[in-house]
Every structure is written in C-alpha cells, then in structure tokens.
View (spheres, rainbow, N blue to C red):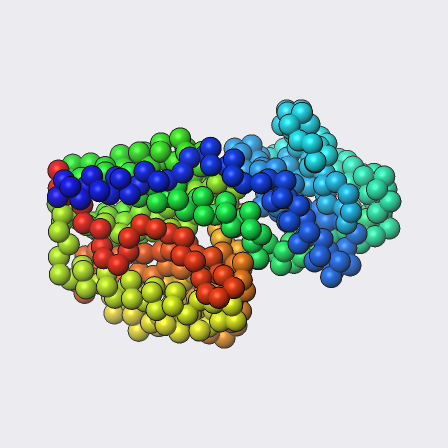
Length: 433
C-alpha cells in the first residue's frame, strides 16, 4: 500500500505553479476577449458597456477584482468599455494608485461606490448622493468619449443606479448582461490554457489529499493542507468541500469540512470547486477509499462513473444538453425512497448540484447548464470552445455513504478534451498508514 501512496504523490508533482502564467499571453487574452465582446456589442447596437459584476469587469479589463474588498465591500470596482478604444477600470483609490503604475493598456480611474458596503450602510440622503456622483462620473466619461448619445449597456439590474443614469441623460440598455454572457460562453485560446493550468494544479491538490487522508486525521486538517498547497501555487480558494463517512450522503453542504476524524473503511470525497486561477474557476471532484473499498462501494462507484463516461462520450459541437442529461437517471426514480427523499417535482428542483453540468470560466456557472429539470425541455447546443464541468453521484444501497465524480472539459472542433487527469476509472484506494 505504501508504494501506491508514493506513486500517487508522484502523479501530483506535475501540478503547475503560478510561474506557469509566463506561458499565458495576457495581451492576447485581453485582445481576444475584447474582440468577442465588441462583436456582441455591435449585435445589440451598444456604444459602450458598463460592467458592475466582478467576472465581467475582469473579462473586459484583465483586472481581477476578486479580492476581499471587492467581494466584502462591493461597488468599489467597475469598468466601462467603449465600442472602440481603451477599456476603463474604476477602482478604489489605493488599488487604482497601484494599477495606474502597473497597467499600460487599461485606463484606470478612481471609483465612486453606487452600491455595496458604503452605500448600504449609509442614510438615504447619502445613498442618493453616492448614486448621483457615480452617474455623473459615468456620464462625463461618455461625453468625453463622444458616446453620451449612444446606447450604453449595463450588466446588472440595479433600479436606483439605472434610474439615476437615465436622469443624467445616459441611454441605458439593460441587455448589456446578455451581450457579455454570450461573449463569455465561448472561451478564447488563452482562456482555455488558463483553465488547463488550473486543472493541473487541482490534480496536484488531489495528490495532497491522497497523501494526508489517513485514519486519525480530521476533515479539517486535510482541508487545511489543500488550501495551503493551493495558495502556494497561486490559486485563490473560494469554495470546496472535504466530506467523509456519513457526511458523504446526503452530502453535508452546510459546511466546508468538519472536525470528524477519518476511520478505516471510510469513503472521502473532495469537491474542489471555485478555486480561482487568475479569476478562472475550477469544478472538479474525486472520491477516495481509506483502505480497500467494499464491494458495494465499488459497484456504486462504477455506476456513477459509467453515467459520467456515457455523457462524455457524446460531447461534441452540435450535441445538446438534453442529449447529455438523457444519459442520467430521473432524480425522483433514483432518490424518492431513500435520502434525500426527492419524491415530487418541486423537491426535484432542489437537486441542481447533483447529476448535472455547467460551463466554467470567470464564474462557476457560465452557459451551458446540464440538468434534467431544465435541459429536457429547454436544451442548449454545445459549441467548440465551451469549457464545462460534468458531475455525477449516488449512494450505496444502504445509504451509508456516497460517491461523487466530476471532470473539467473543453469542447473541441471534433469532440472534447477532458482536462481532469486524476484517475477515475476505479475508486482511488489509499493506504491505512
């Protein structure tokens, strides 16, 4: 068994570090994203585009606003993209001070928060003042660019912001979010390479789990080692789970991990989702057995991996999400008489994170979405350049534990490229010591 452990750690050594960013051409990354965005701006007849959400800000500027302040405060980072010329990123004064010195192809200005912490925690009069100053700032820039008479797309529905922009004379078009979502659906070559880089580091995170998951070690201790490794490799972990034993079915989604001590014979699985690599998000799961896996676990694992492989075998441009989810069992038939007791259509609408799939990119849920509750009736067509994740799961016949597997995938011109490299044909059995 020790030899297996040593082999697993060796597999993980190809997880690439942050230095691999050197092979990403960030100028081309931005250039290609802007080309896509502006093509959809033209379709929607937009002269400019105001981005208020972090993913869209990064998409049009390469500036990653996923810091503690951007998420915890809100409203302090936004961007304005003209149909031609230089993107403008608005940042809080400290961040803007540094970005002005770092960035050559992006114009940086100081932000005025029209929502978020400073806005929400202030009196109504102060809120009106901030919103008015923000709208005036945007209008002045549009007038400077001679775009003040052109429609300006916006990616968020914030009535107080939209109304104030209109009062300032801005021709606001609320379809800006549609234009950006359509642009982001197909990933550029450099985006695909960033997601490959991310998958390689997550491969190595599983090697950390394979090395640390032993009897007597807690879920929390394993999670700490994964986070430590991920941060050393330059990732930004913002999600995920380590589950063991009874926490694996139904999956305990109420917490990332617990102080439960791993025991011989336990099943352990890791959901390494929302780990950021220059803003691009992971979604990648694997299941482990502490010691040899019992027969019923192996049979459950084979059933779950078969669902995943049959779905992956279909993947190519032109295939629909309906074609994929038809390979998976009905949630009510599967779990109506056992936990989590999905015994009617309304409860089935709570299964959106079980046997499903989704696009991955600057968010964990880019288009398309694969789920029987939606895709059978409202299918979406796959296109080359989409980056997706597919996941399947089920439990043993006695409901004592569950199995989860997920792959990260790029849709290619002729099929698909599975960029998750941790072995999945059989459950990974770990040594006891």
